[in-house]
Length: 519
Image 1 (cartoon, rainbow, N blue to C red):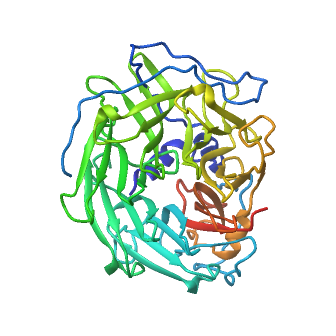
Image 2 (image 1 turned 180 degrees about the horizontal axis):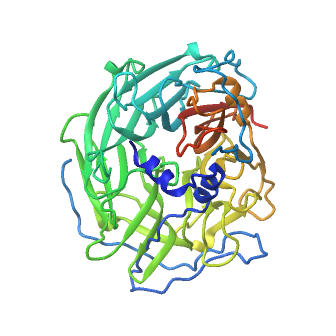
């Protein structure tokens, strides 16, 4: 049983599923930190005033650099909560409706046979739709593999999709496409099936025949001890990326206590054993650096850019920092970072536009002062190592609603954000077309698919002692845009049972693809 279930059992009240939703909404990661080249400085509290929902107050500019030793190596009854859709299931077995035709607002469950989660969605240059996700429960063979799915056209029909599965004990996946549209995956597994604190990272690649398991090659990329790889907060993962030459890279937390490692492969075939190396870019011993939830990407000329929540000596609370490495990223001294703002519990993703300018979606969980739980769009157009050049706009959503954001930019560089509506337990979508990082930004938002639509598509069997079932959805969203700018969002949905019974975990978990035309 995965530790996600253990966390949920600890968090929820046995008398109300609603309490579970509220508790998870209040959870926030633990603090982290950084250092100046000139010495240590006290934290400066960034924030918005309690009645001022303006842009994020950025930290003053200070040149932050990190020089660390290089480490290289090979590698009673329960009523449905508010917002839930009750779907009584009179008998065991799934009920489903015809798959909706593409072109409107609709959705698809890629897998209805065993529980799945950790979705990633991408679109290739020919318009083909790709998905990767992991098993949450054992499949018919008793394994918990990674899944890859591909559809070239007419993706509203399940018959248009091809699938492959491979690996075992896969907890989460990350996903990237080469310029030629070939899939590359990073699989997160655990050595220990009890505590799941010994992490293994597997690189998987396929160039042909990718909807068959025989088309995939997998190799061990890195292993670390005492590192929790399961995310109790249902945040999307963004630590894996391909550089301008399609070479794979990722950043992982070295220890539970802290530290960070940059793993990379420069070989022609990175699925060959011994082709992976790594560099420690932030050490916990003796420097007490901690990096959490890194979001890694690369410029068109191969320069590394990363956003990360972190702490450092004499700064024991979170700061969101912008990291750069322009060359020789296997050298720790090549990495520099620049704190942008303080605040615990930040959830974020970094993207680059066509001019390699950084853009972020940032959920500001628990700032030092001011309004907590706000979602912002943050951008910089030039000299981005100076925090004064970063601008932000409030997405104009209620506090504590938009969690775990994912960001995509359309062909004109306009931001689109998918998020988990943590109040109504559905996937949310926000967009802006002009002045998007200013206070005059015209952000709009919608919830494209109600949970009732999921219930019409598929209702898993409920325990015999239960009388009701309902879907929650929208967790861990992954956003991709078609060439026409139409959103495709992968997200996690959880089916809960109740009514005449008490349950302490979902009956079923399923990856959902929601697609619709850009409003």
